[in-house]
Image: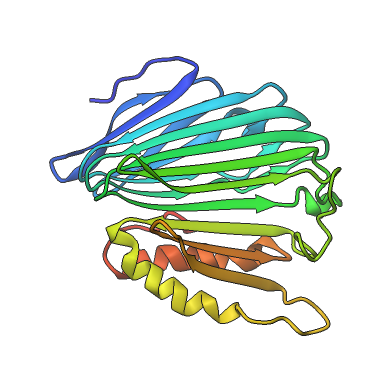
Length: 275
């Protein structure tokens, strides 16, 4: 049975029941709604914000617990428009036992004069597995806005068996430093980061490393490549793939590759990114 309540924090709890991953608690909070289009081997949950983004004063919180044996695919209904003003989102996830979570984050689109903070805290057991896909764009590029936001902070913290294994922090302030420098974004307008941890991601990590590391190497050409990727093993366990490109659509192949490989291995039985 799904219990429905109302509070400032959106709460989701997924458990394995009779061979299915089921949302046993779904409590919509301020500014966020949850939808569950699929509850079979995987629980597919969609997040949606009112108005399609974050306005000045929004501070959304999401808490998720995945019980042993459960599988959660968390994705969104579209882009996250970061409107003018200050806003934030905080996500805390606990994976118990051999739970498996695939999180496909909303592409962040920071508007001019916006200030946004995104914090994600993961607590995993040793047997748990996680794949997190995070997107960042330069802004409303089609309208001529590129890195015109005031500040953007993304903070990812992952603990495994109560030990800190990853602290990934990205702070962007275009007023203090130019993003057009080659040491920063250069000509690129979009960034995707894929973080993988746990026993169920090893085969996928090996495939991603073999395929996407082909882009790495000394760049001696007079003009930067349209896409740049890197794949690295994390010092305390896990892996991370980053790719930057002039346009987001050139990075969608990375996202599709992750999903396709999971489906080919039998870990995933549906396509959450199918258009």
